Figure: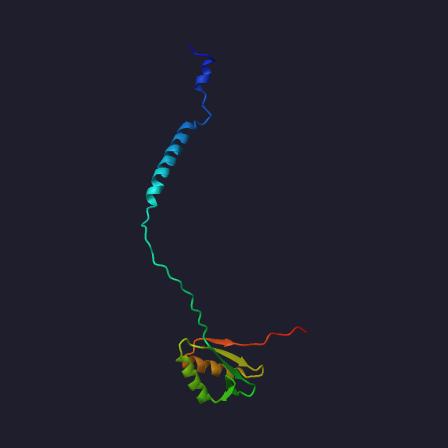
Amino acid sequence: MSFGSPDKDDDVMSEINMTPLVDVMLVLLIIFIITVPVINHAVKLDLPRAVSQPNDVKPAHINVSIDAGGVINWNGTTVDEQALKGNIAAAAAQSPQPELHLRADRKTPYENVARLMAAAQAGGLAKIGFVTEPETSR
């Protein structure tokens, strides 16, 4: 005996059965609860303790300036090209190597600046910085 019409048995069921999905999720949850403490195994070590300060050694810098006439000053002392090459070689041999701060007059020909940079590179100085004056607002 069936209640209802005989065509009702052929209808497609449109509801999703959530019971198998909930069962699978509970099994996965139990597996994760059991396996996570096993994965987090660690060796207990009593490591030595030390206090250290970072050693920030700032390299010295050398001020080299070229005026409009092509005169080169090494830390305020006028030098010729031979003395310049000797000073560059002595500075390149220092550890840590100093930085070369180049100041050039506005009217200095680029050839003089390029010659000084080439001498610094040939002498072994790795860091050259150009020093400029900030523009004043008018």
